[in-house]
Length: 131
Image (cartoon, rainbow, N blue to C red; front, side, top):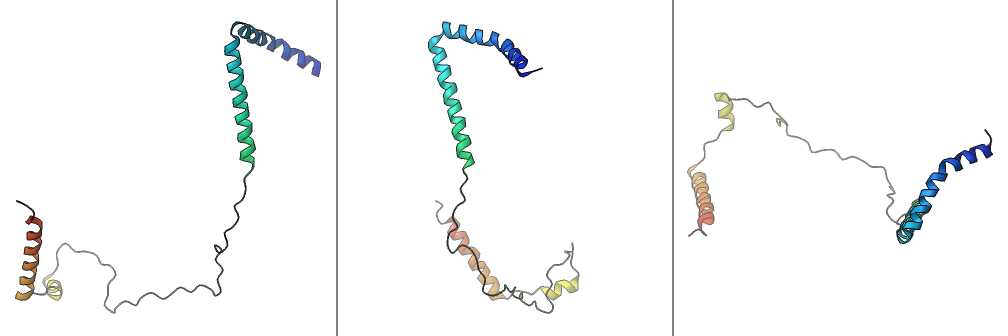
């Protein structure tokens, strides 16, 4: 096929469509103008979007935001742990009597009275506003 044959084939297939458009225009002139205007506006918006999307401007670097090191970074040593310090342990369901005695201290009467007084103050503060 040559170009002339292809053009004739396209004209032949589009002629019924152009006839329908022409008939619609003759029957509904005002609606045809509105549709043509909206299509033109849509094409204009698409062209503007393509034109604006193509222009991506790199922002200018702000002075002072680039970090320039004068000396190499040195990671500080972490705090030293005490000799018998355990960072984690496997919890047991029940302690033995020796383990309990090692960690449990019997509070003195002064500590019990201080705790009782702190609890009473907390209760009075909570219930003080109640009628």
